[in-house]
Length: 185
Figure: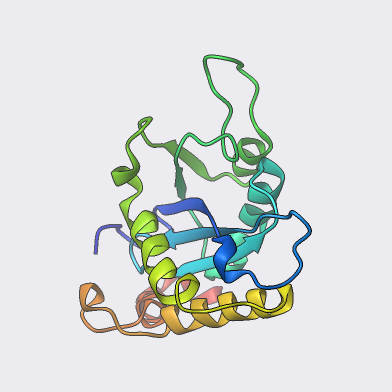
């Protein structure tokens, strides 16, 4: 396990949900999945949104610690405009950056055009495509949201080889059951 503890570093990315699996009237709306994955426990938090924007990513990060169940020290993102502003164009912070700073979470940007640096979340999106979006058809927005939540729950409760055959939820539980400082939470 790479991180020192849960929340040490969480990778976040946003991915387009293919139109082929959307079989309900979307009236031109596109759907995206925001994924946050903790490097230590591999616990994931998924959210479906209708736009790829700092507005949606800042709402996501406001809920992230509660959904993960632990405090986050650092968030790692790519240089997408849904997360950060281009430093060559402006010195102003994006809405996402402002929220992350306000929460006291460190923000780490990967090098431009280096998606392998966010490998865990990129791989997780690829697996979501194989398991969820290439195999299922959604007949309503409600069904899409429910299936993504079900997929997240299944993933977080499934044992992983890299976690010594424990599930992400087990790793988090075991870590905090051994942590005297964290027993009050």
